[in-house]
Length: 125
Image 1 (spheres, rainbow, N blue to C red):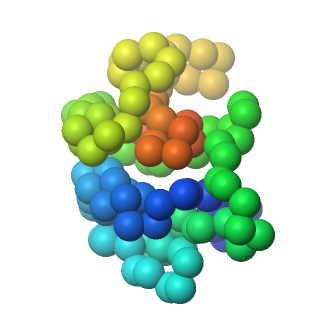
Image 2: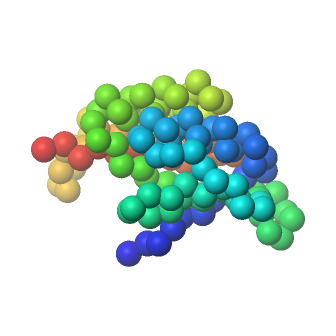
């Protein structure tokens, strides 16, 4: 359904350093800079961080969350710990199992350096 997700940042260098480390825990290669953006490309889609083209400050989406697939609960925990170590802030409940009518999930939430809400999700069998 989606080809890519792009979020804003106010500091491209810091965002690249943060996401290189964070997404590296999920096996995603370092981002590639293209003018005012950083792209992380995989066979399942593209994630990008960009300085706003209109020159105004980047702001996080109220109610928005960007979710990344984790292969295991341990990988989600490593993702979360790496995010915190690189300046992210924990949010929501601590990483752990959540059950819903849609299934059982292991979730880890944090906010990036610009306040964007992120989630690592492992679908449990």
